[in-house]
Image (tube, rainbow, N blue to C red):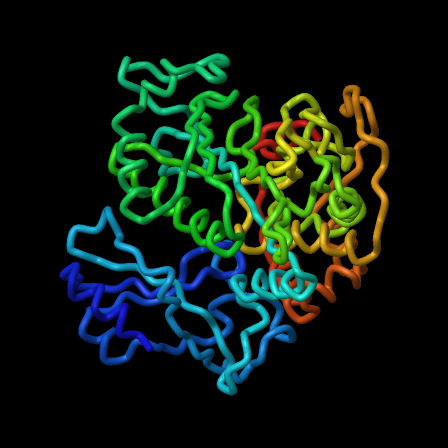
Length: 444
């Protein structure tokens, strides 16, 4: 079953194998094995609790976990085999899938959650096509978390300041870094496309070519590791926080989505005459109805909510419109074959598997229920009231009450995810911030 993996390891003179599984926050967990050990035992076991850690490495409430802590059966996905280009010794990386001892997919594994949604689309005769856009900041090394972040020094010897959106010279400041990022991506078959400088100081964006949702989730997962590693080599950090710096715009993971009709191979969002299909409008309406209910997947941390403010290219509503960047759901100009919906809500801090699964789940519910969208917005949607939950606590309560999303993603998974998020919020509120010490210590 794994002969193609073994042959590839030998042909590329691999000495170590990184056995990886993405956890519920999108962190790479797993083991590093010598090649010969991996070949003798390509499958491994880890407890399910490994998947369910908070972003700080803690675990949710005991009542949510099986206290016997049983092992999952982990099997490598041959399609995920890649080299680790920054490793000193020849090293491979493999993403593993999670199963119960009787062979069923583990419900809380992010890859399995996405597969669950894709299977529902397959049963309807459609295949989702997605294209993520990844924004991130380059920053100077910041070993002390109490010190605010600042942009790194570029080739001119100065840190960036002001607004340099789409500036070629601003990107050239970090040419050696981006050359290495592209080299690393090429070595891993990560299909990255356009590089641009975004609005923020040393804020960049790299777009991916459109393709299969599970493959793109893998690519985004590996891309985050790749960019961080390349930045370390150039004595800077790369961060995928949603809002890392005060006074600067946040970073998004915009998702372009369409559906292929499996019978015709054509874009199901367009009719034969080139007009938008009913499916296209159902999909948009599903996003409009369910994005606010599923907010913890699109804004997973307290910091995520700082990004969602007016006039910062971040959405504050679920309106939709043609080529309108003030709405949450933008339909770019395209040919009928390229018709798609851009979900502008997710922050780049999202778990790529879960954010794709949930965004597609919202559209799926719109199709199943044949929902109708509002009229397209042709004016400034920032003038409308805020249409999302305003706090993590409110967002969690709305998800807890949304049985439709739970049914599509799996109730046990959603319950576990909520427990992880509640644990993170509880940890956050134990920390006293510099703002509190500055304004409250001697004034109240």
